[in-house]
Length: 94
Image 1 (cartoon, one colour):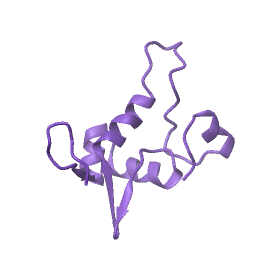
Image 2 (tube, one colour):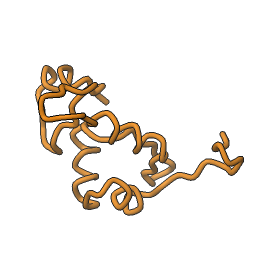
Image 3 (cartoon, helix red, strand yellow):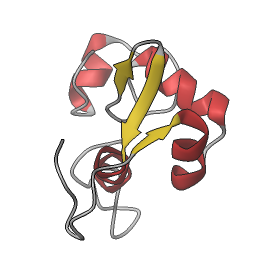
Image 4 (cartoon, one colour):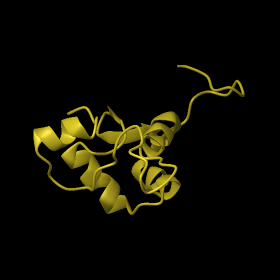
């Protein structure tokens, strides 16, 4: 298991905690998982867990300096998208 900067073991977050951190509802985060538009996650047995670093990277991928800034990529809404839309948003298909 990797360690964080503070030397503590890495912590994995369940969906309710992850949703609070990114400011979304639990259901919206679940939809992002279904449609492949959300942050990276892992399954441990039947449990879905998120790494804090993956949540932060996902939020940062949508960061923009202004309304005209294209940014690095686009965080798509939690709905079904075509493969072309996913590719244009630079989000890898799962």
